[in-house]
Length: 526
Ligand code: F6P
Image 1 (cartoon, rainbow, N blue to C red):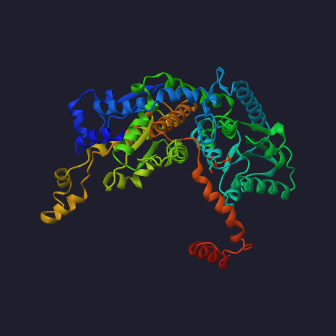
Image 2: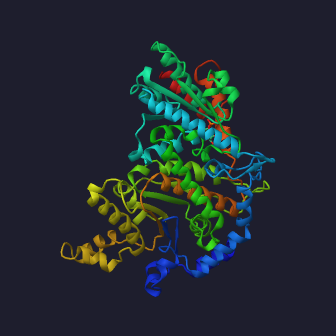
Image 3: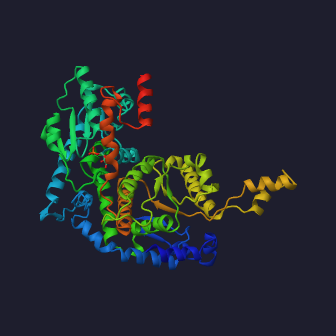
């Protein structure tokens, strides 16, 4: 499948991207797509009409359109777990029927949404000053990322997010809270995750130590109401969701409760509506004008065809500081697989390493490597046309200028002649030559830019859904299951076995030499 594309890539080796703009005045418009008020510009890449056609043929050949309908229709596309994949139902505000095993799931989804809204209203109107969401992975990253992103809309109680089993995490959060006015939200799909259960118990003990009743102080967000009940949270305080909502796709439902309490139900609904608008676009736009499809294909051109192993996500939006971490789970837990649907080993690379930080901070840290390092790192920039700080317009203009300058610099680079010009007068002869070489930028480095009007709740919903569907399209083309995560199991099992060894209750005998040494060293130093 990739051979034809690799041949196209080889034929384009060394071709300058900036020259493509000189040849084609309409290049920027041709290799861009607008949807729902957002612009995705992928013209600063090596993609041309022939490459795009070949990429679209790969998507069509993989059956993206039919599989997309299967997903939205409730088919059990998560084959290794025998589950449907229906996070889209959580934002189906119109309530049009969505069936799983012949049952319409929408009445329950909408009922849970109303219950969440009632609780959020109650908490916002009560004297609760602090909400602590205790969860990890998908039960943490989404609501945390979203709450930070929507800071201008945050008019509810303060929100804290505790995820790490490192006691420092909960200790730091509790230090900021008053026991009488703090609500704990225990967010865990399975209600068995060791980090979450350990932190939840510590929160419970903290209230008891402070002499404050635990009654009404805990809420559970979980698919496992039984376990939540056994733990001590009554059914009326449990907000459930079904197994067809994957952890990393769950911020649209009960897992989003802390964010809803922070910004209010109306803003949360706007977030859902944004996701729903992106769903409608994804389902109806032809592949060549379909933003998630194009985002996926550009990523695959860079990863599977050109072999660039990582991609940087660079939001020029300080409030999207946690988006790269959120996308790390979304993309890497979904598409970091090495077997195809049929269990056979993949003959090509699966999803890339995803990483990033907000601009402009990253510019003063790791952009050096992006510009002059030996590896090519495709960059995904994103920025809002407007900010929430109209009085600080000059800040935003600087932010925009920096964002656009980076993609321009990556593409243009600076050749030796230009570099010589920069140091001429300061140096001469061999030293001038040496100094100039350090100032050369190879350029021709690809990037894409997503521009949205303003990071409001609706736009956040569109961006998250855009990336979810990108992951789906990549997964379909790779023929992998994007919705399981067996790769996290082994470490969990070994940690369970190592617990009693670390605490000295069991011997480390039988473990490898390195593990024995690590255990012994920490035991000597406790
Ligand atoms: O360990 C991986 C994982 O299963 C993620 O997929 C999930 O988001 C996270 O753990 C938390 O799981 P839970 O919500 O069941 O506590």
